[in-house]
Image 1 (cartoon, rainbow, N blue to C red):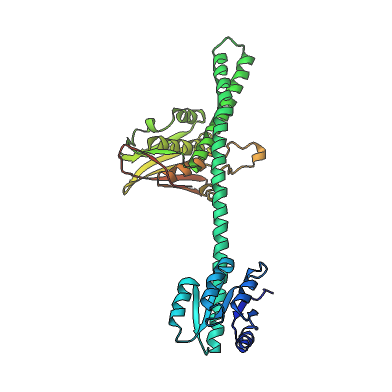
Image 2: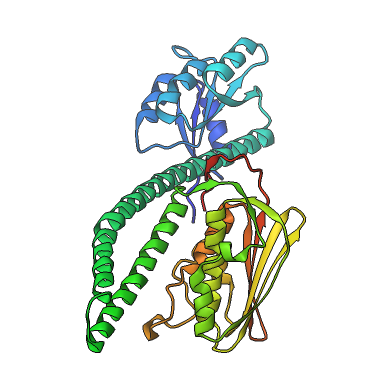
Length: 382
């Protein structure tokens, strides 16, 4: 059972305190004080947390206004109500200005009105207290988020220096070995080292891309690009992969100009293509279209493949999501579509995925932005 709200009633007339106690004790814990001085002593006790303070205005030694003003130091969040006569207008104004009074109640009071007023005051106290706690939680969460961003930045520096530097040396030396005199077994071993080194470098680059996107460190440069020249948009290795898996590509590209960041747009399409090539069966066909929809560009790639639930890939937590059992050596790390979505969001667009009758379709909508040939830092947190 919830504890009743605590109310402090202050009046120099004992019969008034008794009347207030009788009215309020059903719904509240009522504490009484016969003077402002006694009330302040009660208020200073850290074990006392009052939701509502009710005080008479005209008391010897200390007025109600003076008491309410002094109570701000110890119980500033308590809701204040003052009892006063109609002739005390100056006191009412002072109570509003100095004591942060919630309401004044004229003597003689109406019992129903007084009870309802105190209940409303207690509800207001609870609401304000809950709001303060939520604000404190939000502030703490913001500090944690800021610390996380700082940790990500330090992690990026660590990856760049402690991982990419030695990995670059490994790849450079394996390239030298590939061009030297090796027997078949040695060449096979060097090829394995180089291929897996490339995979590790791609993983590092993708991880850094995600970190930069999440910490607002990706810079967007809006430039005009000619869409129909597909060979300049996509990585040449994609076409090599098409041949390797005997895949055919059916494409339809409308002639249009698009103002966007060409580097990020190319990265989006590359990630989407790599994902399609990775999971398409040998000998299948990919369908790629680019059409103009109003001022936007819509790029769509469909490939044959096993159906999966696309919803996790379209959320902010889609990083490292795969449709395979990771313990069975999945083909990817779940980063390609996550990066494509992040970059599409950064460009003000969106990405959708659908699976229907063994056909997986990824569609990316990119808006036509104003090209001013200036570099704009992304301020959108994803």
